[in-house]
Length: 104
Image 1 (cartoon, rainbow, N blue to C red):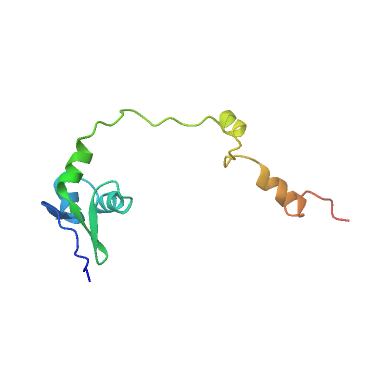
Image 2: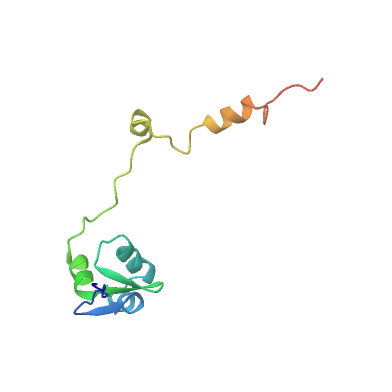
């Protein structure tokens, strides 16, 4: 019967130590581990990070500048509802909420 042994890395580091060393937040490092972007293993509620994998991830070039935003018109063409749509007002008026009826 084979027993499963926990994975060990050559350079192990905790999320807190990695965050301090690489000037990141611990939650960001944990998210990288949780989403399998970097190699890591969970130890209780904490993550043990493969420091070499984190270093390689941080060394990858990033695209500079702001992220592109979807235009409202393009979003409507694609069927994406934006928060500025007045559909919520339409539903409220249909149910009798907020309608401007004269009181007799």
